[in-house]
Image (cartoon, helix red, strand yellow):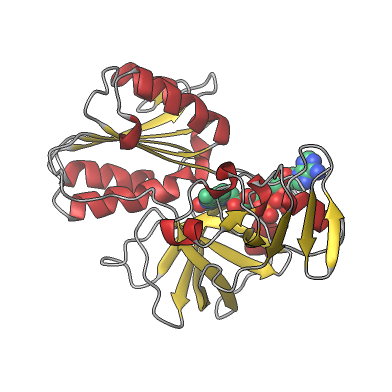
Length: 323
Ligand SMILES: Cc1cc2nc3c(=O)[nH]c(=O)nc-3n(C[C@H](O)[C@H](O)[C@H](O)COP(=O)(O)OP(=O)(O)OC[C@H]3O[C@@H](n4cnc5c(N)ncnc54)[C@H](O)[C@@H]3O)c2cc1C
């Protein structure tokens, strides 16, 4: 039986139970959001014992070396003493400066950071509703081009944070954001490389940031954006993207619709299938995948099989917690 110690409490882990589930199950409120080792909200530190390697995937070296780990991915096989970290993600306050519906269920939220906030387009922040409701949202803005931070938030049925954002958040309201995190970003240095961007729903948010960042930095290689939804009402920013297509000859935009009725000007089929149909050879391409976790998982595999190097595939799965 493996035991974890937190403060003066000694707790036994059930078989294959994560440290996060064990602590939360005993009423110890460890923050979390995605529960899949992505958002890093549940960062903790081992004060005695070694956290399993799987619980340190995605952490920067300084955190790994100082025994930090992600509680949701931590299933130790040896006893471990754990604590909340002193150096969790930096927290900043911001004012809501704009709220605009981009389609029937996606809201653009503009935030004005109240203290210096450095980020790269395509990273994500954790938005705090209250201590037990923290969710990740990707950054659609480009710091060089946009005065404020932009998020695209899709309202989920009975979603506790997305519902609050759509129904209760108001202009001028002060919110806490944590981060930024993530490495789904455009890195300059290979301006001739071909870029393939594939996203579903609000998965366009990071891609829109990455796209504008790349084109603004003079990216020369072909840049293809495939944005998909079941029907065309689920797409958004179509006019802006078509305008960008006219302005940048190396950029092509493919709005994809998977339902049976496909209006003229749209690509029929699921977004990742359409993207790999149009671009079947991916050797040398850099690929960005954002949105529905299943799409991201499948396409990562297909892009690799189509020739993209694993180091050139960047992905953010918008995992939703069910706890
Ligand atoms: C790295 C990352 C980046 C992200 N970026 C974005 C982004 O840019 N835009 C965006 O819109 N989203 C993004 N997300 C998703 C976002 O973080 C939230 O998960 C999403 O907004 C839902 O949160 P919520 O609180 O509204 O829903 P929750 O209250 O967490 O519920 C989620 C859904 O599950 C259902 N549910 C809840 N509990 C149960 C249960 N026990 N059984 C069955 N169903 C249940 C709810 O009804 C709801 O439909 C991102 C996620 C990650 C990990």
